[in-house]
Figure 1 (spheres, rainbow over the protein chains, first blue to last red):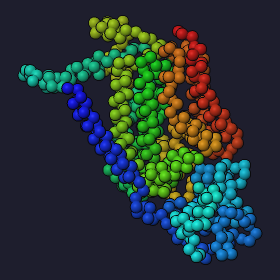
Figure 2 (cartoon, one colour):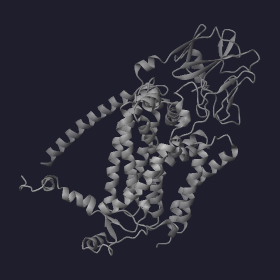
Figure 3 (cartoon, rainbow over the protein chains, first blue to last red):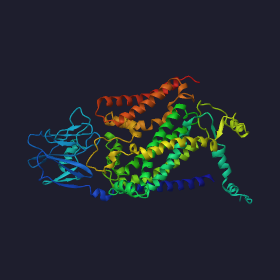
Figure 4 (cartoon, each protein chain N blue to C red):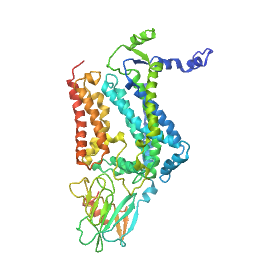
Length: 167
Length: 405
């Protein structure tokens, strides 16, 4: 009787598919970053000890983070981080071209990437006519007084994000 | 139950139970290979032998390698290289073998393209072969991560970044592949698993499939001649070995293969003992450091042609073209509209198509190694990449125009 066979076949197929989907879900979750990796994804930085025109490189989620206290003569930019009366440049220190780490040239007041000659100004904007397609990215941050928490989203970051300044 | 009689030999005993005689006929003594072939037809067995050597050397490396971000570099560069007896030998065989396996794969591929060995019943041979190429690429990349040097780390960073899809900004997918925000412990252990287990397992399966696809259409010959195999086999079996157009795979064809392998392994072991450094990038002798990029990142030579297709374009277009270049060779049997199975030299425009493709891939390879800062070389790279795609667009047109032989 074929209808009975069909039923058995469909029941078997259905349960097998269900089990298969469950297994795929478990496999996907097994490859997710571990909770311990995610929990370690926050970095606190004290801004009060920063020196003007001297680049500080911190590490957040394994990536280099650039923090530069700006001098008064440097151009103001919407990408700047304002703490009291001071302005800071904050970015992920990876060139948006192919991910190399640019170096800061304090005399020229710009970032220079040695890999393919990309340059960025003190606000992290890419200079025209060079390989990088976009400005340096800004990591999610939250300000707590003069302490910067990387990995958390504060109102200042949210504003930049909504304005499309960073991704 | 089947009826069993007392066997008079071990061979007969086995034959009763698992039909070894039939198996031997189907796969060796009555698997007919055309006579009209040259040394390029030995590349398949050369590849199989190289893969075997990679497995053996890999087993010995695996016994001392430690897949941990703090120990991996030292376990390779100190433990295996200086303490383990002949550890250096396994490592140099493994490194040189990984490089040569791609050289032979490329020769094997271009032989197939030249003689038209991918059509008229041989499409699946080509497709399964391309599948093997992709699997070997994944195997090579995952293995390159394991010494955890600077090139391992940054190649891992750049290649996994490709999965963000440019403007799609799928960073979630990239982090999922890595199991972390950057290549770290989870990344190293999963690529270790892929390299020593899943990829080799899939490669072995694909090799069996590749051999299987070959059995019914038989290998091509130098003239692309389509003759009656049954008739030729009868002649051979009747003792008219000279008149027959075929020889059995084993032992006759295999003995020729073994000779080519002998020549190949002289080169292989010359490289292993005297010139292994081409397979050992000096930058990878610095331990992985996420806070310092090497000045110039480039892949191993066998990936340079596709790397050069990625590079001269803007990010999104480069990614799309790179993705196409990775799969375009799969479509060869369907883009070639000509019914002719013949060497390229006798196929009109296709002759030029073949040689331009070969030279273009070589130019892309050389340009991929050079830093992109030099404008002359960058434009040569761009032109070569454009030619690469123009060739594939032109293929159906020029093969459609081709005269039937």
